[in-house]
Length: 194
Image 1 (cartoon, one colour):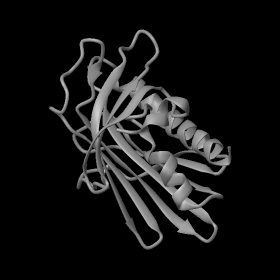
Image 2 (cartoon, helix red, strand yellow; image 1 turned 90 degrees about the vertical axis):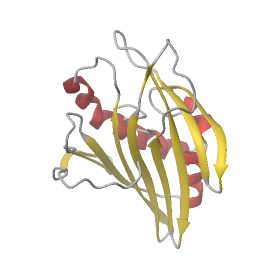
Image 3 (cartoon, helix red, strand yellow; image 1 turned 30 degrees about the vertical axis):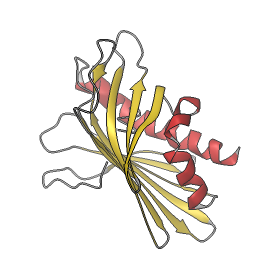
């Protein structure tokens, strides 16, 4: 769906979440969705393997300021503030097609590394900056990028849930939840190869 519904998750598992359903399997990218307890919007999980080092891929993903150059539907993105070791507040604006209003949001990005794995958690955070009349604020989102070294390649697991707020019908939002993460991973592969 959108960067939030692509950018805007800590690995969270809610008791009532539905089973993952494979929605798309193309060009080495698998997209799954599932229901989320108490929500009408679906969560997605996108999986692929990229022939590059984990370090190179992580560097691209955490370079928030460059998202406008490659990440689908992002018209503005920036790191607002470093708040601790591997922790940042990040701001994004999602450019949605008419007649939908554009969305914005602030997330806390936390980067952790362990042997062979990099985890980049994203969770919306409210009250960091004032809301703008130009955008609908996304107040509920969470997700993560999990990068794992597999030989000379990297396994990429991108999972996200976002409730975009405003008056978008849930069924329209759910239509984007497969295409946006697929496009995100396709463009990430191209960015890595460039």
